[in-house]
Image 1 (cartoon, one colour):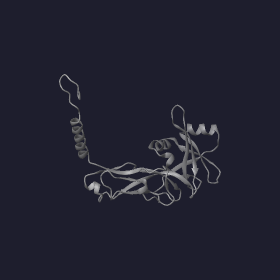
Image 2: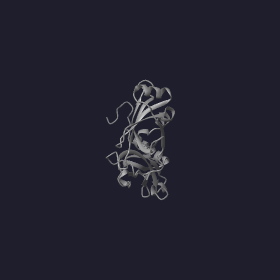
Image 3: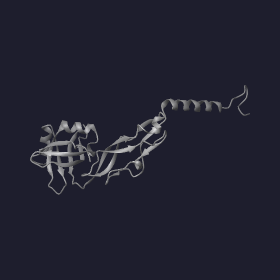
Image 4: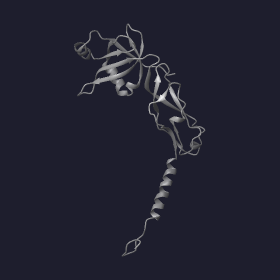
Length: 218
């Protein structure tokens, strides 16, 4: 199951329409709405600075929030749209969708690595690279994994672990349909440099020489 879902606090917005929205912005708030879930839409206001900070942190539209509005039960929501000022690119309105426990959503899930201490490739001096520190999965709102685990315990230098090697939680699947690399073990930089030098020497040996006053292979 997922770890703690971040809280997002909002206020009920009194009044609707352009006038109420403009007043909210003058008060340092961003107007928004919570819809879906077989419940009437709820107009809200969110503090501008708080929302801007979360937007700049990234993944805002792929993060599940616990929406807290005074006078209403907490509800899980996900952002569906952020409207921005055409010139300043600042948020002017935000839409959230209520989620049922069975709702399918796309979320970025962190990747954990196990088996580094026994990996033969690493024991030989190889370097592990986590190509995808997180993977976008389709998950149900009630069963969101905190992370997925990739096992590199049997990887040699040059080997890779792909999403096909990862045991995904029940009901989850990758957004990307094709197989893709999660982690890989590469040769150490010193070995790469030695290989490059060998290739350069070989290439130099293969360059045709020319005789004075004549062309090569004349």
